[in-house]
Amino acid sequence: MEHLLEVKDLEVSFDTDAGEVRAVKNAGFTIGKGEIFGIVGESGSGKSVATKSILKLGPSNIRIKSGEILYKGQDIRSLSDKELRLLRGRQISMIFQDSLSALNPVYTVGNKMTELVRRNESLPKTEARQKVMELLKDVGIVDPERCFRSYPHELSGGMRQRIMIAMAVCCDPDLMIADEPTTALDVTIQAQILHLLRNIQRKKKMSVILITHDLGVVAQMCGRVAVMCGGYVVEEGTAKEIFHHPAHPYTRALIASMPRAGSGKFEQFLERSMQDNRDKDLCPFYGRCKYAREACEKELPVMYAVEGGHRALCHLGEEAFDV
Ligand code: SF4
Image 1 (spheres, rainbow, N blue to C red):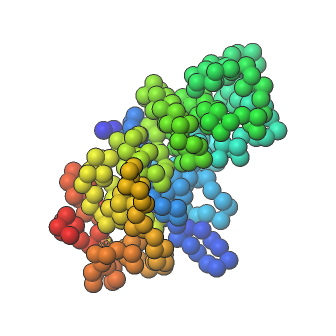
Image 2 (cartoon, helix red, strand yellow):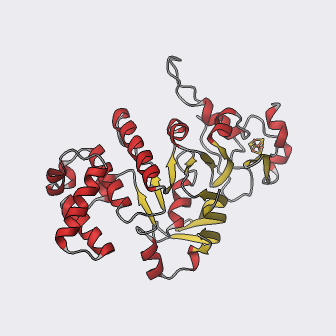
Image 3 (cartoon, rainbow, N blue to C red):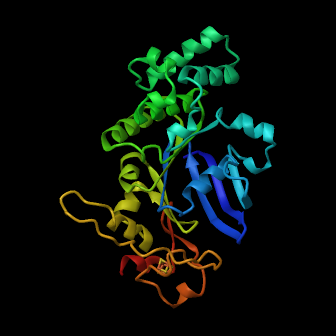
């Protein structure tokens, strides 16, 4: 598969009053053209920080310390602010969980979208309006005229998320980053938005990075997956490998923690809070792992190849499948 984006050895930290907080450590993954790639992990695992760093987004105290972010072979880190602005939205777009905050409350949907279309395509107002109406229809808005005149707070969460998707694809980007796009929605609307996202991804043949804590969403949507824990990518592989042949104890615990229909209980495999290994170069799951051994408290494991592109960061290596 041809690579669209390669993230290599990414280190990201926050400068805080209490000192440096390392949020992403040595993370690496590749996104192929036209694929949906999932990044999954608990809150605080570094998945959102890693992906926002791709577009140099985030709070002012965020710092990319090292690593490469190669988009079509060019390192995004070397781009000027102007080049980065052109890249954002036009080639790489992003949608967020909180659509109400992402949309400007003082503008109607029509105002905001027309402005966006005109800025990117230099169209006259009437043609820009026409394009906005088509975009709204493409994302399944039943009454685009009414939606055009509405303010964000007058619309449902599902409709706002459809509008976010319409805005994200208005410039035909090659890559969309979707950060927990369905987390705030109820289950029925969530299914509709995922269905829409997949249809649009196929139609436009774009790549999608789908960030989620929900393994069910990953299983439904993604071809390949990276599992993040404590700032590290601890396992990467196809969705089939991750779900049917997980190599890392953290991935197994995540899968075991999934609520199962009919089981009547939610097994808390991950109830213990994360041990703070931030300043030590140790396995991020050390302290919660029942398979920990002597080497785990001394040094960080190296990523080993399980098979093909399936790889895991664990001292157990191949023994993982015997424990
Ligand atoms: Fe567990 Fe050690 Fe593997 Fe970490 S490196 S997941 S602590 S066995």
